[in-house]
Length: 98
Image (cartoon, rainbow, N blue to C red; front, side, top):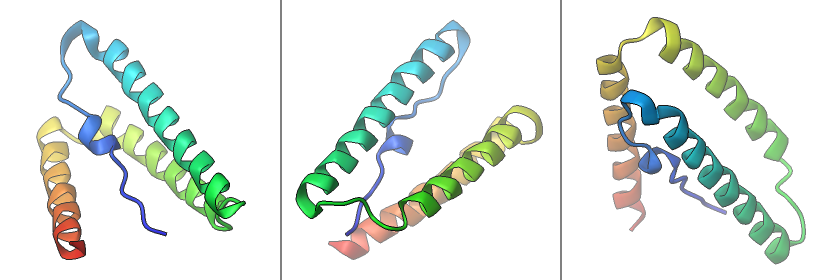
């Protein structure tokens, strides 16, 4: 089974007073998208992947690290560079999969 997340593509640069509203809408979209993906997996295969809890833990730890770095330690320009690298890697993987 292969999947590609779309959360990074849903993000847009935020500034000003709309940050909490935009973040809430994106979070709701990501949650609904993930839940529907899991529901489709259960409907098709009959069970959740056995490694789901491992990946849930990895994602949680990654989110905590990212929130710490983003709020206290790393500048916006550094995050943009890192996002650029991530998008280049994802793009190369996508092109290689076609």
